[in-house]
Image 1 (spheres, one colour):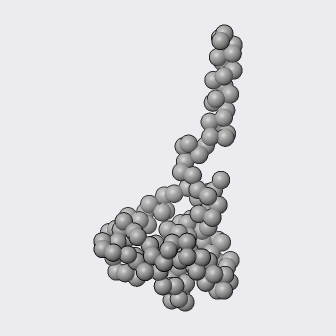
Image 2 (image 1 turned 180 degrees about the horizontal axis):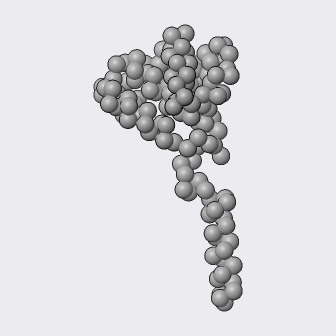
Image 3 (image 1 turned 45 degrees about the vertical axis):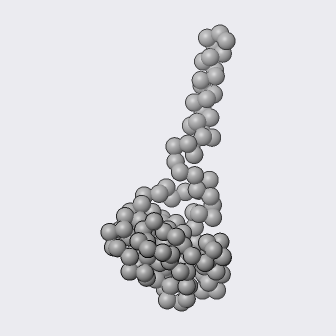
Length: 133
């Protein structure tokens, strides 16, 4: 490989990493994981119930959280839970928290888990990039 070819190779590698390989530098987030307050707020009550039902089925009816000290958190979604998610997203600081993080945080609150652990989870969720690939 001559010097000119090496230069082109490294230039193309740099451009690939800059444009196409950004996911190397940022956590990969599927579009479904990127549902945040704007989407949640646009859902009707029926759509919110359907979303949570799908979440429960995808989670196997339980959410085993590292923040939960013992056992499992049972997923029981009713209008009170939907209201708690609505209130969670009413806080402007939470608008970019992904829905899956918001659900876990609200479940941990319902289970009266350690407030320090809930706060750590909240800080983590607020720090995630607010975009999806």
